[in-house]
Image (tube, rainbow, N blue to C red):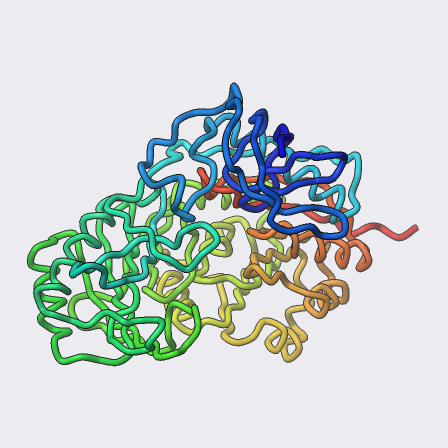
Length: 445
C-alpha cells in the first residue's frame, strides 16, 4: 500500500494516511512517498513498516552513521538539523494542545545544540560474545538484538576509544560475557561517564558478581588510557533489562568526574543523574534562571535535584535554596558541590520527594519551586503539595511530554497557569526533547 508521510511523531515513528486512517511507520520523514506493509490494525490507527521508498523527500539527507538504518540509538540522522528543530517545535506544540488541552498557546522556538553530534557525556552499551569476538553497541530498532557499533557519532570522545579497548582487555582476560537467554556469564554492560571540561572519564563495568580479574582489568585500562580517571564494578544479577544494580565498588582511581556548568564545578558520581548533554545543560540552567525571576530574597525549593545543578546555578540569586533528592550518591555529590562552590545558602534533604515534603512543613514557605522529575513525572500528590505551599511560581523541567501534559492539568487544577514553555534540544538526532515551563499562581479576585 502506498502513502505519503505527513509528519514525525513523538516517538520513533512517522505518520501518513491510507483511506483516511492514520498509519504509523518507523524510518521515514515528512514528504517521503513509501510502499507500506500493514502489520497491525487498531481501532483508530494502523501500524506498518516501510517496504520501499518510491520517492524520497526533498528534506532527506544521507545519514553519516553506517548503521543508522538498523541501530535504535537515534532516529533522525536522515533529516537536516534545522528540520529536526522544526519538527520538534511542531511536536511540542501539538502535544501541548492535544494531550495538555492548552490551545492557542505559543511555544517558544527550540534552543538548538551547537554540537548536534558528539554530545553525549554518558554511554551505556550492552555486551555480547558473537563469532569469537566481544562486541558492544545498541539494540536494533524494535528488538533486543545488539547492533555492533565501533564508533557512535553521538558519543563524546574519548568514549569510543575507552569502549573499544575495554572489549580488547575483556577478550585478553577471557572474561565470560553474560548470556541473556541462558542467564549465565559475568559481564553485562559498559558504562562510560565523561567530563567535557576536564576531558576525563570513568568506566563502570556491570557484572553479575565481583570477579578476581577486576584489578587486572582496571589497571590495564588506566595504563593504556590516561584520560580514564577510574574504573568501577557494578553488581547486577537481576533478570530484567535494568542496567545498573544497587552495589558499585571503585576498583581503581576515582568513582566520579568533575564537570563545569557556567561558573560552577560539579562532582558527578558514576551512579548519580546528570544531564546527558553538557552544553545544553547550561542552556537549560539559564532558561530556568530567566523563568524564576529571582530577586535575592526568595526561598526556592528544588525537587528531584540530582547533584544540585539547577538549584546551585540559581543559588546566587535566591535567599535560600532547598534541594530534595532520593538518590544517596547524588545527595552526597550535591553536598560536596555546595562546599566546592562555597554556597552557604543551599540545604539538602535525602529521601522520596513526597515523604520529605510531608514531613517538612517549613518547606511550604517556598516562593519559587523548581522540579525536574524522572520520566514518570511528579504526579498528583506532589502537585497537591505545591498547591498548599505559598509558591507563586513553578518551573517544571521535563524530558517526557506525556507525563508533563498530565501534570500540566494537575497544576491548572491547583490554580496555576502556564505562562512560558521553552523546548531545549538536549538529544539531537533523536525524537527526545527537554522542555522548561513556567507556571504562575492565579490571583483570586
